[in-house]
Every structure is written in C-alpha cells, then in structure tokens.
Image (cartoon, rainbow, N blue to C red; front, side):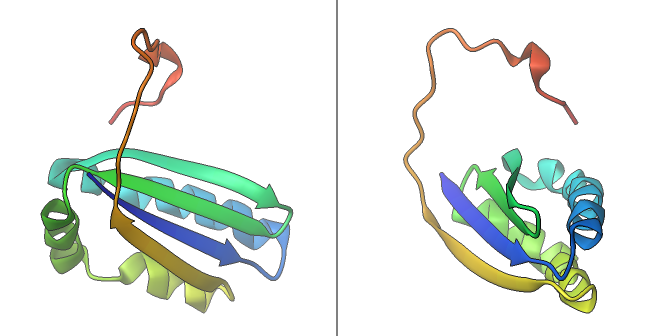
Length: 105
C-alpha cells in the first residue's frame, strides 16, 4: 500500500475548515482510482493533516496524472503552507472492524 500525508498550516481556522470541505469533495473522485481511505486530522486550530491510503503507488500516480496537483494549488492560493510526506506503507487492521460509522463513497 502507499500513503500520502499532507500537513497544512493555515492563516486562520476558517481557512482550515474550508480546506476540510474542499478535500472531501475533491478526493471523492480518487476512490475511483484506488484510494482506500482518507483521514482529516485537526492537529491544532490552524493545522490540518490529511492522510490518504492508496492500494499502490501506481494507483496514486494515475490519480495524480488525471487530476494533477489541483488540490495542493488551491490550498496554497488560500494561504496554506503545505508539507508533503509519502511512501510505501504497511497497514494492520483489527479483525472485527465495524465500518458502519465510516462515510462511504
């Protein structure tokens, strides 16, 4: 599996909340291209961490080719400072996970 993490620092909390909504809308399409899960984590009032779990790096690259880095560009236009981390990932899960509280696309 492959993980991409974006840590974004914002000038204010309103910008952070706007990007949370934006990320959810843009990443809906990524599920068609191998995205397995997306997490928005509010680290502080002005910092957000978005974690995306992909089937493989190749699936991520396909989505990136199709959509480009539009999301990152839009975040920067809103004054966000973006730091990106990514790489191969080992994933463990609980045997009996209840997915009923997860949003599905």
